[in-house]
Length: 266
Image (tube, rainbow, N blue to C red; front, side, top):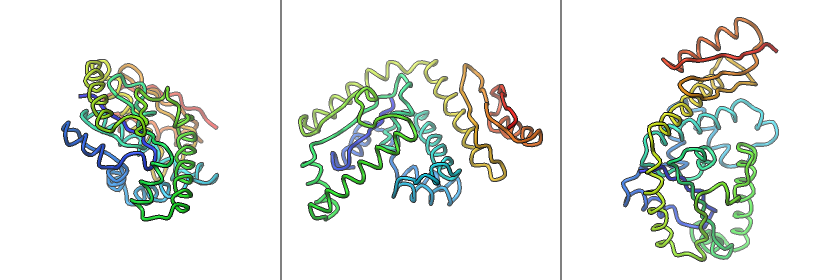
Protein backbone atom coordinates (compact mmCIF):
# COMPACT_ATOMS: atom_id res chain seq x y z
CA UNK A 1 0.00 0.00 0.00
CA UNK A 2 0.94 3.65 -0.38
CA UNK A 3 2.45 5.90 2.28
CA UNK A 4 0.04 8.18 4.16
CA UNK A 5 1.04 11.46 5.80
CA UNK A 6 -1.41 13.29 8.04
CA UNK A 7 -1.07 16.93 9.06
CA UNK A 8 -3.73 17.96 11.57
CA UNK A 9 -4.71 21.04 13.48
CA UNK A 10 -4.57 20.69 17.23
CA UNK A 11 -8.00 19.56 18.42
CA UNK A 12 -9.29 18.59 14.98
CA UNK A 13 -9.22 14.80 15.51
CA UNK A 14 -8.13 12.53 18.33
CA UNK A 15 -4.85 10.65 18.08
CA UNK A 16 -6.98 7.51 18.13
CA UNK A 17 -8.32 8.22 14.62
CA UNK A 18 -5.04 7.74 12.70
CA UNK A 19 -4.15 4.94 15.12
CA UNK A 20 -7.42 3.23 14.19
CA UNK A 21 -6.62 3.66 10.50
CA UNK A 22 -3.25 2.00 11.08
CA UNK A 23 -4.82 -0.92 12.92
CA UNK A 24 -7.63 -1.48 10.41
CA UNK A 25 -5.38 -1.20 7.36
CA UNK A 26 -2.35 -3.00 8.83
CA UNK A 27 -0.17 0.11 8.66
CA UNK A 28 2.68 1.10 10.95
CA UNK A 29 1.87 4.23 12.96
CA UNK A 30 4.64 6.83 13.26
CA UNK A 31 4.23 10.05 15.23
CA UNK A 32 6.28 12.40 17.40
CA UNK A 33 6.81 9.79 20.12
CA UNK A 34 8.11 7.18 17.71
CA UNK A 35 10.48 9.63 16.04
CA UNK A 36 11.82 10.77 19.42
CA UNK A 37 12.51 7.12 20.28
CA UNK A 38 14.44 6.72 17.05
CA UNK A 39 16.33 9.97 17.67
CA UNK A 40 17.36 8.57 21.05
CA UNK A 41 19.00 5.65 19.26
CA UNK A 42 21.22 8.20 17.49
CA UNK A 43 22.29 9.63 20.86
CA UNK A 44 20.41 10.78 23.95
CA UNK A 45 21.23 14.40 23.15
CA UNK A 46 19.13 14.26 19.97
CA UNK A 47 16.05 13.07 21.83
CA UNK A 48 16.61 15.91 24.32
CA UNK A 49 16.94 18.44 21.50
CA UNK A 50 13.78 17.04 19.93
CA UNK A 51 11.78 17.50 23.12
CA UNK A 52 13.19 20.98 23.61
CA UNK A 53 12.38 22.16 20.10
CA UNK A 54 8.92 20.59 20.30
CA UNK A 55 8.12 22.73 23.31
CA UNK A 56 8.98 26.06 21.70
CA UNK A 57 9.80 27.55 18.33
CA UNK A 58 13.60 27.98 18.14
CA UNK A 59 14.83 31.51 18.64
CA UNK A 60 17.14 33.24 16.18
CA UNK A 61 20.30 31.76 17.64
CA UNK A 62 18.88 28.24 17.96
CA UNK A 63 17.73 28.23 14.34
CA UNK A 64 21.33 28.65 13.23
CA UNK A 65 22.77 26.30 15.82
CA UNK A 66 24.00 22.93 14.59
CA UNK A 67 21.89 21.10 17.19
CA UNK A 68 18.70 22.39 15.56
CA UNK A 69 19.99 21.57 12.08
CA UNK A 70 20.97 18.10 13.27
CA UNK A 71 17.57 17.51 14.87
CA UNK A 72 15.74 18.54 11.69
CA UNK A 73 17.88 16.49 9.31
CA UNK A 74 17.93 13.40 11.52
CA UNK A 75 14.13 13.60 11.87
CA UNK A 76 13.78 13.86 8.09
CA UNK A 77 16.09 10.89 7.61
CA UNK A 78 14.00 8.82 10.02
CA UNK A 79 10.77 9.75 8.21
CA UNK A 80 12.22 8.82 4.81
CA UNK A 81 13.38 5.46 6.15
CA UNK A 82 9.86 4.73 7.39
CA UNK A 83 8.46 5.72 3.99
CA UNK A 84 10.77 3.16 2.39
CA UNK A 85 9.10 0.42 4.45
CA UNK A 86 5.72 1.26 2.86
CA UNK A 87 2.41 0.66 4.67
CA UNK A 88 3.06 3.48 7.10
CA UNK A 89 1.08 6.43 8.48
CA UNK A 90 3.30 9.39 9.33
CA UNK A 91 1.55 11.95 11.53
CA UNK A 92 2.91 15.49 11.59
CA UNK A 93 6.61 16.37 11.45
CA UNK A 94 6.22 17.97 8.00
CA UNK A 95 6.01 14.56 6.37
CA UNK A 96 3.79 15.86 3.58
CA UNK A 97 6.38 18.45 2.53
CA UNK A 98 9.22 15.95 2.71
CA UNK A 99 7.34 13.35 0.64
CA UNK A 100 5.47 15.74 -1.66
CA UNK A 101 7.26 14.50 -4.79
CA UNK A 102 6.87 10.81 -3.97
CA UNK A 103 4.16 9.53 -6.38
CA UNK A 104 2.81 6.88 -4.00
CA UNK A 105 2.58 9.15 -0.94
CA UNK A 106 -0.88 10.44 -0.05
CA UNK A 107 -0.66 13.72 1.85
CA UNK A 108 -3.67 14.71 3.95
CA UNK A 109 -4.49 17.85 5.95
CA UNK A 110 -7.24 17.78 8.61
CA UNK A 111 -8.74 20.95 10.08
CA UNK A 112 -11.80 21.82 12.16
CA UNK A 113 -13.83 24.89 13.21
CA UNK A 114 -12.23 26.77 16.09
CA UNK A 115 -15.14 26.07 18.47
CA UNK A 116 -14.85 22.34 17.87
CA UNK A 117 -11.10 22.50 18.42
CA UNK A 118 -11.44 24.46 21.65
CA UNK A 119 -13.98 22.01 23.06
CA UNK A 120 -11.69 19.09 22.27
CA UNK A 121 -8.63 20.77 23.82
CA UNK A 122 -10.58 21.84 26.93
CA UNK A 123 -11.76 18.26 27.44
CA UNK A 124 -8.46 16.56 26.66
CA UNK A 125 -6.16 18.94 28.55
CA UNK A 126 -8.63 19.88 31.31
CA UNK A 127 -8.26 23.59 30.51
CA UNK A 128 -10.54 26.58 30.90
CA UNK A 129 -11.79 28.19 27.71
CA UNK A 130 -9.39 31.12 27.99
CA UNK A 131 -6.44 28.81 28.62
CA UNK A 132 -7.47 26.60 25.69
CA UNK A 133 -7.68 29.63 23.40
CA UNK A 134 -4.15 30.70 24.35
CA UNK A 135 -2.84 27.15 23.97
CA UNK A 136 -4.37 26.62 20.51
CA UNK A 137 -3.18 30.01 19.32
CA UNK A 138 0.37 29.30 20.53
CA UNK A 139 0.54 25.84 18.95
CA UNK A 140 -0.87 27.07 15.63
CA UNK A 141 1.64 29.91 15.52
CA UNK A 142 4.65 27.77 16.37
CA UNK A 143 3.73 24.99 13.95
CA UNK A 144 3.20 27.51 11.16
CA UNK A 145 6.53 29.21 11.86
CA UNK A 146 8.43 25.93 12.06
CA UNK A 147 7.04 24.68 8.73
CA UNK A 148 7.81 27.99 7.06
CA UNK A 149 11.38 28.04 8.38
CA UNK A 150 12.19 24.41 7.53
CA UNK A 151 10.28 24.02 4.25
CA UNK A 152 9.46 27.59 3.21
CA UNK A 153 5.78 26.63 2.96
CA UNK A 154 2.43 27.66 4.41
CA UNK A 155 1.11 24.77 6.49
CA UNK A 156 -2.50 25.57 5.48
CA UNK A 157 -1.88 25.90 1.73
CA UNK A 158 -4.27 23.35 0.14
CA UNK A 159 -1.94 22.75 -2.83
CA UNK A 160 0.57 21.18 -0.42
CA UNK A 161 -1.83 18.26 0.12
CA UNK A 162 -3.65 15.66 -1.95
CA UNK A 163 -6.71 15.78 0.31
CA UNK A 164 -7.91 18.58 2.62
CA UNK A 165 -10.66 17.77 5.15
CA UNK A 166 -12.71 19.96 7.47
CA UNK A 167 -14.14 17.53 10.03
CA UNK A 168 -16.69 20.15 11.00
CA UNK A 169 -18.27 19.45 7.61
CA UNK A 170 -17.42 15.85 6.75
CA UNK A 171 -17.95 12.98 9.23
CA UNK A 172 -14.76 11.22 10.31
CA UNK A 173 -16.07 7.88 9.01
CA UNK A 174 -16.59 9.35 5.53
CA UNK A 175 -13.15 10.95 5.66
CA UNK A 176 -11.57 7.59 6.44
CA UNK A 177 -13.37 5.99 3.51
CA UNK A 178 -12.15 8.68 1.14
CA UNK A 179 -8.58 8.32 2.39
CA UNK A 180 -8.71 4.53 1.99
CA UNK A 181 -9.93 4.81 -1.60
CA UNK A 182 -7.25 7.39 -2.42
CA UNK A 183 -4.54 5.16 -0.94
CA UNK A 184 -5.58 2.33 -3.24
CA UNK A 185 -5.18 4.67 -6.22
CA UNK A 186 -1.83 5.98 -4.98
CA UNK A 187 -0.58 2.43 -4.56
CA UNK A 188 -0.80 1.98 -8.35
CA UNK A 189 1.94 4.61 -8.68
CA UNK A 190 4.44 2.60 -6.62
CA UNK A 191 6.72 1.65 -9.50
CA UNK A 192 10.32 0.45 -9.37
CA UNK A 193 11.42 3.86 -10.64
CA UNK A 194 9.49 5.67 -7.91
CA UNK A 195 10.93 3.39 -5.22
CA UNK A 196 14.47 3.87 -6.52
CA UNK A 197 14.02 7.65 -6.42
CA UNK A 198 12.82 7.45 -2.80
CA UNK A 199 15.76 5.22 -1.90
CA UNK A 200 18.18 7.79 -3.31
CA UNK A 201 16.37 10.60 -1.49
CA UNK A 202 16.62 8.67 1.78
CA UNK A 203 20.29 7.89 1.22
CA UNK A 204 21.07 11.54 0.45
CA UNK A 205 19.40 12.59 3.70
CA UNK A 206 21.25 9.88 5.64
CA UNK A 207 24.60 11.10 4.29
CA UNK A 208 23.76 14.73 5.04
CA UNK A 209 22.65 13.83 8.56
CA UNK A 210 25.88 11.91 9.11
CA UNK A 211 28.02 14.92 8.22
CA UNK A 212 25.91 17.58 9.94
CA UNK A 213 25.88 15.61 13.21
CA UNK A 214 29.50 14.44 13.00
CA UNK A 215 31.21 15.37 16.30
CA UNK A 216 34.45 16.63 14.70
CA UNK A 217 33.12 18.25 11.53
CA UNK A 218 31.52 21.65 11.25
CA UNK A 219 30.48 22.37 7.65
CA UNK A 220 27.89 25.19 7.80
CA UNK A 221 27.22 25.04 4.05
CA UNK A 222 26.62 21.42 3.04
CA UNK A 223 24.08 19.55 0.96
CA UNK A 224 23.60 16.16 -0.67
CA UNK A 225 21.52 16.02 -3.85
CA UNK A 226 20.11 12.68 -5.04
CA UNK A 227 20.36 11.79 -8.72
CA UNK A 228 19.83 8.70 -10.86
CA UNK A 229 22.08 6.13 -9.25
CA UNK A 230 24.47 8.69 -7.74
CA UNK A 231 24.80 11.49 -5.21
CA UNK A 232 26.09 15.03 -5.67
CA UNK A 233 27.74 16.51 -2.58
CA UNK A 234 28.13 20.28 -2.39
CA UNK A 235 29.51 22.50 0.34
CA UNK A 236 32.21 24.79 1.63
CA UNK A 237 35.17 23.41 3.58
CA UNK A 238 38.01 25.19 5.36
CA UNK A 239 41.10 23.31 4.15
CA UNK A 240 42.33 20.23 2.23
CA UNK A 241 42.45 18.07 5.36
CA UNK A 242 38.82 18.83 6.15
CA UNK A 243 37.85 18.16 2.55
CA UNK A 244 39.53 14.75 2.66
CA UNK A 245 37.80 13.90 5.92
CA UNK A 246 34.40 14.90 4.53
CA UNK A 247 34.92 12.88 1.35
CA UNK A 248 36.01 9.81 3.32
CA UNK A 249 33.02 10.01 5.66
CA UNK A 250 30.57 10.60 2.80
CA UNK A 251 31.84 7.57 0.86
CA UNK A 252 31.52 5.44 3.97
CA UNK A 253 27.91 6.55 4.48
CA UNK A 254 27.01 6.20 0.79
CA UNK A 255 28.27 2.64 0.55
CA UNK A 256 28.44 1.38 -3.03
CA UNK A 257 26.56 4.35 -4.52
CA UNK A 258 28.80 6.62 -6.65
CA UNK A 259 29.39 10.12 -5.29
CA UNK A 260 30.35 13.29 -7.14
CA UNK A 261 31.90 16.06 -5.04
CA UNK A 262 31.61 19.81 -5.57
CA UNK A 263 33.31 21.03 -2.40
CA UNK A 264 34.88 24.48 -2.38
CA UNK A 265 37.15 26.31 0.02
CA UNK A 266 35.97 29.22 2.09
